[in-house]
Amino acid sequence: MSLDDLVERARSLAAGGGRAILGIAGSPGAGKSTLAEHLLERLGPAPPPGLAAGAWVAHVPMDGFHLADAELVRLARRLGRGPSVAPGGPGDDESVADVGPTTL
Image (tube, rainbow, N blue to C red; front, side):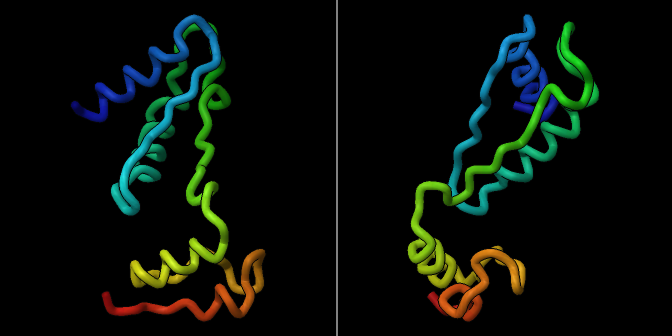
């Protein structure tokens, strides 16, 4: 299935002006967020009939919403990744800020 096919299927979910939710599931690092960004770029300016361009579609990321912070840190260490935390921002404490690459 091509990106064009996915765009048309996503657009058809909101046909008639009703609310629709499209979920994208996959393994960590599979490209879910990238796909969502591409869909938004294509869908935003071209809504189905009856909906306004731009504001009719949104990306609501759910990364890690179901996991405790300690588990997210453990997973980041296991995957050799640091956390997605801005220095000095929310979540930037010693337990999170010292996460560094590890060898599996």
